[in-house]
Length: 254
Length: 78
Image (tube, rainbow over all chains, first blue to last red; front, side):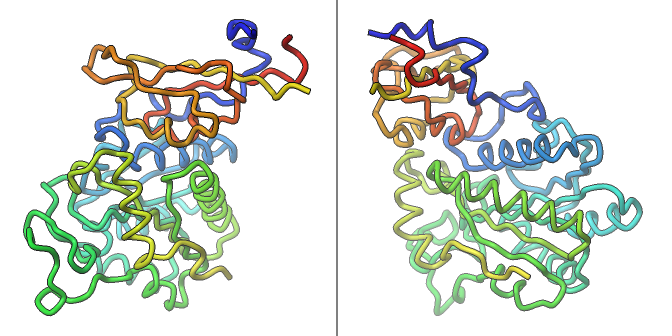
């Protein structure tokens, strides 16, 4: 029999909370992918030793409060305008590492123009895009990314594509623009996927250091409150329903 | 040869009882407690500590980053 107290010793420590994360409790619902992605960004910043030189741009949405959770400099943009603000910050301070953090309502609906033009100009920034197929913060309304037939508070019978159109695959659209150097779609619902997402984020920040252009990391995520499921069930639902429409993997890597 | 032995420490007060760690654990070490923490959540705990291999899956997947993982070198514990 092993006594766990013989294992819990400093020399055996293999995983601990990074100090780039603040001590504040996250405001997100239990099991929300936002927390996992925040942690990965914090770990990448720690590993690259760029905490002093990183500026995040928070969006409107659940993650509007992201500036409370990472111990870096932040700006918070008007709805959808994070890529425009990131452009300004990066152009004024090109030595800084700048990233925007946005949801699908922010990046793919209200900020479509800012998103497309920042990518088309090839702004040397990292864009992190959390796609949960719904407007999470405001009560689960239909977003451009809502799946066909998927219920939302504004389409309780499910999205009707004859009326609302097909969901937009914004990452595939952005990958066609010459300004983007790296476009990938990942998830954080299993440990293996979390590790892959961290590698993708690292690559995106390395691209910025190498002045390669815009890197977009999409993370297909859950919204268990908006989808009205338990966190574990929402991850299963995501695997069955979201991934066939939003397949994981690199879309562009140059 | 014994497997590497591990152990986790859950920050009970921070845990929201989402249960994602219970599905990420390959050896089914973690369960949600019958009791609740100060926020009213059934926090995660090591229900089956002998099975822990210290793989860190629970730690890296935890959205609230409230799990610390320790892993003893193989053979270091009897």
